[in-house]
Length: 272
Ligand SMILES: Nc1cnc(-c2cc(N)nc3[nH]ccc23)cn1
Image (cartoon, rainbow, N blue to C red; front, side, top):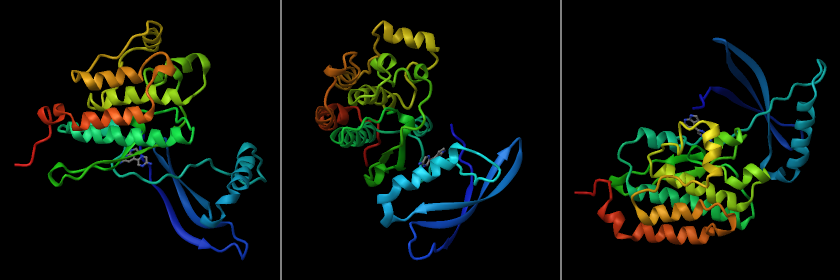
């Protein structure tokens, strides 16, 4: 689990004169290195909302300076600033929570499917779909029928491929290319996680045995709920072209949401 360190940014915006493309903030970066707190004065340049069109030259300038270093050249830190999502990663949340209902899980699964559908329409493959990359913005409260709200996080710097079995699609180990179908496979693996209370699939298997899982065309242990288990195995088919479209995934999730299984087996406490 990533430790969230404190980065204090004080808002002192200084105008850059009339042609300003960026807002300038003064801040300090606090680092804990071998127990000692180091504070570094930093300057933050935030691209102005009205000048999004020149983000390329903005990043070009930054990346040029961050690739070289010399005592008389300005030091540029690599940093990504994200919106802070209150309840953090879904896998940790599910591990910690005891009574998460079937309908809560289906709602989250559907939100992820909608995010994937949007990416599919833009022909963008995410490449790192997993419960760790699903951030929970709103917990949802069964008593007030308030539903959860998730945000799919950035793909991040992906770990070693073998460590990402079974989220990374099998074909990626050979092609090393991420296609849209890869996200369908990962969706199936994430669905398995969500309905196994955040437990990582194949956890405890060492990389060699994880690789054999793919070499033997193995499948994850099926869930009791057959229709859901079917959806997971459709997504986790070894032939990418056989995996369902996002529209089909959403349609199947909708029928699971309305199916009697959810009513009969709802683990959430129905309002008295
Ligand atoms: N864009 C993001 C990413 N991670 C969080 C987050 C929230 C939280 N409650 N605990 C955490 N622990 C580590 C990260 C994190 C928030 N926003």
